[in-house]
Image (cartoon, rainbow, N blue to C red; front, side):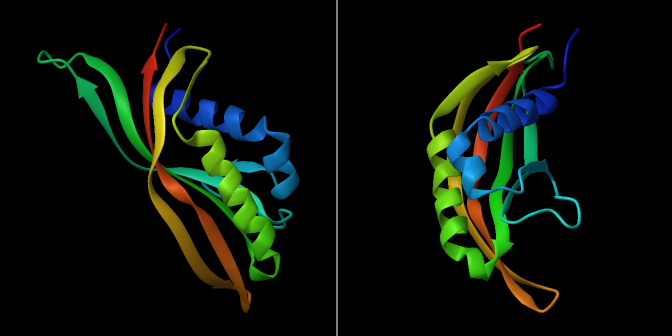
Length: 141
């Protein structure tokens, strides 16, 4: 059974990030797609597709996807050291990475740009630290 390439990218990201004990120690709220549920322990990691494009042959046969994915650690500014360390660990895990999951493969992953956003949540300063990662994925079955 084939799996859509974006699902392959997301599964690989989740497996790679959640499988690292250092990152889980720095982000005890876990790894989430798009957003964490209300009440999640902080800091936590979220990832979301920003933009993607299919790589196709001249007769429009899809070979793979080329996706830009936002990956960041989120939490209150009072935990800024943990957030910074978790952001560095995300980069250590994803820079120049590749791998496989059921039904697909990640051919390459690298940070295209850093990401640092501040926001006010319930009157408190929160930080977002991470990057935009270019990920090339393909179906293998």
